[in-house]
Length: 388
Image 1: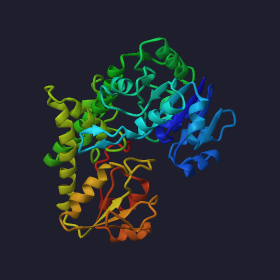
Image 2: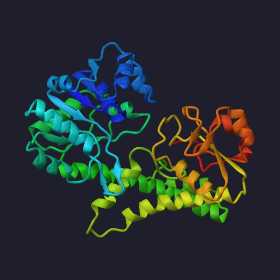
Image 3: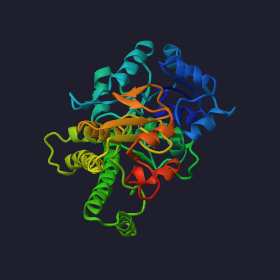
Image 4: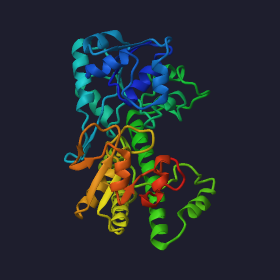
């Protein structure tokens, strides 16, 4: 197959490299600097497997910033552009997806699109009607940041929202490029595929919220969080995965996907979806109050990223903690090696790690790192198991 991928973030680049093993791939991004980096086998993303694949000589992937060239090249146009949640509209901003479809159809009216971007429930059918084409297929991604390509190579499932010969062909194309034997494939109606994506991420957010509220209870009552979680997790129906307390769920997907699913519940009875979103806010309140109660003059924020081995600041829970602490008039400083600026939202960025450790009365770290061990008495973290 000839495949063009539009948008080279985690999802787009992971798909381009995956398909480049056996298909002919042209990977497009509007950011020319990013394209040049990829042409030089350099990635702006933190992902070991992506870096490994970029170094290979046997992949058939060409990187371009020529939109028309990418459209004319392919049998399938994979759209992996960002769709952020618009708080005012209570809806994903899908303008980047629609921009690709609009411009591509002007070049060739027979284009077939595979949407990998996350969209609201019902979006694909609306898009087919709006653009007057049946050649729009939604196929959700289930990728972890920092392990995007790995999760594509060993997928939990391959879901294509098109139960037809075309859908089967798309599913087979992806299946032939994965490493996992007998990968599960499910062809569904497009709206059901959209719901699968949002309900999956909201369940994960609910699990994060559950173990965070367990930890809030234990810390408030002077109990041992680790013992409780280990005992609860021994039930095989619950399991010992995804159970490490944190400052709240964050990142590219969970905050916006939970809010979008909640918005899709208009006029549908529900309690849990609201509770998941509210629980994340309550957790940040609790964590901030625990830090404020230590009466620090200076609070140091160790890393802005969502988790270990991540370069993503967007929607990281630590930012909500910072805002709450600063609202009490407490000085907040930041140590973030990947940040070039002198300040982050009016908080000083400290470049020297030794200075950062010295001036901070409390060091707030979502995950405990070895370089903090010598100031352990200053560190506030809810990391119980030393894992993401």
